[in-house]
Each structure stands twice: as C-alpha cells, then as structure tokens.
Image 1: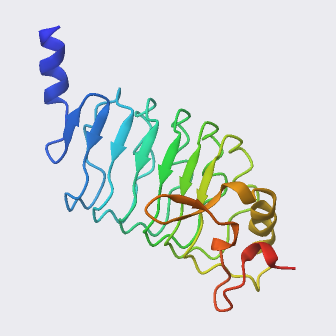
Image 2 (image 1 turned 120 degrees about the vertical axis):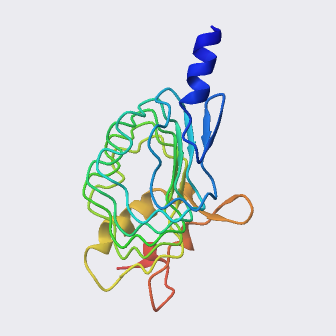
Length: 195
C-alpha cells in the first residue's frame, strides 16, 4: 500500500495539489490543462486560470470525473467531443469564459449531469438539441450571455427555458431559481418570452 501512496503522490501535476479524489489546479495561471492528472480522480478544479483552449481528447482518460470546473478562464471555443468520455460527470462549470458558440452534441454523453454553468460567456445561441440528453439537470446557469433573439436559432433555447423554468438559475452567493435570467442581447427581454 505504501508504494501506491508514493505513486499517487508522484502522479500529481507539479502545478496542482492532489488530495483524496480531488485535483486542485485552481488559480495557478495555467495556460492549458496540465498533463499527468491522475486518471482515477473525481474532482478536477481548473478554475481561475488562463486556459485559452482545450486540446481534443484532453479529458479522455479522466473517465471517473464527476466534477469539472473550468470557470473563469479564457476559453473561446470547445473542441467537438471534448467531454464525450466523461459520462459520470454531474457538474460542469464553464462560467466566466469567452465562449462564442458550442459544438453540436457537446453535452450529449453527459447524461448524469445535474449542474451546468454557462453564465458570463459570449454565447448568442445554443445548438438545437444541445440539452436534450441532460435529463437529470437540476441547475442551468445561462445568464449574462448576449443571446441573439433576432435569430430563429434562439427558438430551441427559448422553448427549453420555457419547459424547464424550475432549473434555470442565477447566482446570488447561492443558486436562485430565475427563469427570466436568460435575457436577449440589447432588449433585456427574457429569452423565454420570445415569440
């Protein structure tokens, strides 16, 4: 058992700290996801860094993850399929990035997800069907994005919010139910009111 302890201590990326099921790489000025994250961990904190892009496959070996925090980085895009191997994930925090669009099907394999954070990005629309597999979702943070309600593409998000009013949240130190927190750019009309 001692050998295993030494092994897991060695396996932690130098920029991070590893304890129990958690790999904490929070606020380390990282420009990218560090290599060598132990594959048996459940919680990965990468928030508060300067990550500008995710390489395709970067999380593929981390199949045990249940909690992935990428909030407060500089992500502009996500590679297609980047979360596909994370079928155990229950929380995905992408808040406070610079995401302008989401790839089709990017959340399709995250069927256990309960919390999805997309607030404070540059998203104008959500791909058709993006949330359809997220049947266990209890909290979705969509606020502070420039939702383009002039474009017909908004109707998927409009209908989704209208059908899931109880899980659309804003953050006031804690999650607060607020289905009107997803607002149209320019007009501040709630997305769910678009006709």
